[in-house]
Length: 83
Image (cartoon, rainbow, N blue to C red):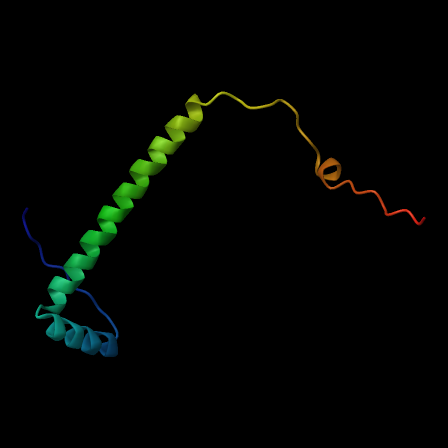
């Protein structure tokens, strides 16, 4: 895969903390950012595929029931009666 440069602007304190994390892990801030971005993109692709599969399943599903209720019917409560 061809590589390209990406310039990011971030808060100086975040960059400082990222450098510390990268040093602890024996890597670079660039490698940390690249790893996280790859994870984000991969997750987004999985979510979109799952959404597409779910929509296809829902389109094929047979309708269930034909009764529609109004909000008033669903929340109809009888007042307690004194005995």
